[in-house]
Every structure is written in structure tokens, then in C-alpha cells.
Length: 332
Ligand code: MGP
Ligand code: SAH
Picture (cartoon, rainbow, N blue to C red):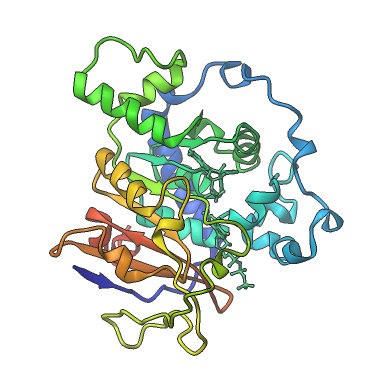
């Protein structure tokens, strides 16, 4: 097992980058997108409540310990600056305010995950899915919470990419099971457990990349298991790489604490679909535990995701994604 911690490049000029990706994306979509565009009305059948009732849109709606996320809102979605083409602002519910991947980080991950068909298994309000829509031909975005999914659709509209994302409401584990049934029976018959045409269509897809950004356990995820404080280790093949804060004692975040059923299960489920997996995990994750997910000769690439001088989280790349080189982007 080999973990590398490549240094993150400074965040590129985002708007320029987005324009470049969007141009490329639009070209790709013209030839591939049609079959994935939901039919008129297909998304509306669930009868969602008004998502504005669940959205936190003013500072005074935030509990004290969450105000920092409101202050950082333009890092989370840059279109909080009000320049969206449709004039609307993004919407986030309480859990999403602290769970969303900040846009520059999501853009970075999307660049590395550039591929034909990607599955975002825990899409939330779309922080990652929207960026994947700029680098991937087809984005399948699942979330168990219909309200978040509805917000994700709204946010994708704010970003003008909704036609590139197929949103599925349900449990990711059910999706994997359905996908495997489909694979194992090579089914010409449809999945008996689902009457949803979109699910049935997506079960037949081959996924190039699966992205996992599961719940970590809330805003106080860093104080899980406080009874066993340990010092975070540095595991780095590049000594000059900035690393997780080693000065102060921090608890390891246990892989088993990732919802819904622990990091090991999650990884194994995703590996059924493709070896190319990206997991977005706490910066305090136990890297030795992470390493135990793969065999001795496999490589994992771990990127520290820095924003404005702070390491926010780690993205861990498996399969071909671990071998990705920076100049694959620069040479385009
Ligand atoms: P944080 O540690 O809560 O905030 O989350 P921050 O700003 O680093 O706090 P500070 O006081 O140390 O500066 C950092 C990032 O982790 C967030 O921006 C999210 O992208 C991600 N994140 C946090 N949580 C609790 C979750 C989660 O439950 N699930 C997922 N997928 N991402 C999360
Ligand atoms: N990456 C997202 C944030 C994901 S937060 C973004 O940037 O916007 C984790 C999400 O996992 C939450 O939205 C939660 O509703 C969803 N979730 C929790 N359990 C799930 C399950 N079993 N299947 C699918 N989604 C689930």
C-alpha cells in the first residue's frame, strides 16, 4: 500500500476555469446529453413541499456554531454573489450548510474525476454534482433526502447545468443492490423492486467514477471518540507537502463513523461499480485505516483540500484516479 499526498495547486482563477470546462462540456453534451434529460414533468411527480421552508437564507436563521458557514457562503457557492443568469440564489438546508463541498474544492475534484459517466452517491444540494456537470458527460446524482434533492435541482438551475444531471431520490445502498442485480442477471427484464423509470435506466449504466461524500456526523465530527485522543500522524511521500496540523493533538476520525454504514462498507459497495472511486473525508481521518481498504500493492492518492490557508478536508482517490497527473489538466 502506498499513500501519496500531492501538494494542492493554488486554486485556479475559478470563473476562467469554469468557462473553459463549460465550453468543453457543452460540446460534449450536444452529442451525448439527450437520453439523460428527464422528460417534462418527470421530476415533479414526488410532490415536494416548498423547499424555501427548509432553506436557511438569512444570518439570523443560523445557530451560533454555524454562523461561520453563512459567512463563508461565497466560497461554498460563488453564485451567492447574485450573478446567476436566472437571478436566483442557491438554496441550502441546515445539514447542507455544513456538509457542502466548497466550490473551488468541488471544481478541483471534478477536474480530477473528469470522465464519461460519474455517480455522485450522496449529492446533497449539489455542491459536487454541479461541478461534475462541467467536466463529465453524464452525472447521476443520488440523495436519500427529497428536500435536498429538490434544492440540488434548484441549484443546478442557478448554475445552468440541470440538463446534464439525472437526480435520483433514494438510498445509495439500494441503488448498488439494484445495479448488481441488473449486472448479475444481465437483466432484460426490469427491476421488480423499482417502478421508477429513471432508476431502471441508471441501473444499466457503466460508471467510470463513483464519488462518495457521505455524512460525517454533524458539525462536531472532530470530537467523535474524545475518550481516545491520539496524535494525527503524517504519512507523506513528499516531505515538503503541507500536512494536517500536527502541532495540536487531534482525535483520529474513525472510518467506521462515516454514514450510513461505515467507510469500509461504503468503499466495498462503490468498488462493485468501478475501481475508480473518490472519497471525500474529514481531514482528521485515520490514514492507516484508510490504507487498509486496499491491497498491499495498490495506491491511494490523498489530496489535502486547502482553501484560504486552511485544510478543509481530504479527497482520497482509488483506482486509475490515484495515478492522475497534474499536467493532464494543464495540457488540455
Ligand atoms: P468544518 O470542519 O465543519 O468547517 O468542515 P471549517 O470551516 O473547516 O471549520 P474551522 O472552524 O476548522 O475553520 C470543513 C468542510 O468539510 C466543509 O466545508 C465540508 O465541505 C466538509 N464537511 C463537513 N462536514 C461536517 C461534512 C459532512 O458531514 N459530510 C460531508 N460530505 N462533508 C462535510
Ligand atoms: N457533496 C454534497 C454534500 C453531501 S452531505 C454537496 O457538496 O452538496 C451527505 C448527503 O448524504 C446528505 O445530503 C444526506 O441526505 C445524504 N445521505 C445520507 N444517507 C444516504 C443514503 N443512505 N443514500 C443516499 N444519500 C444519503
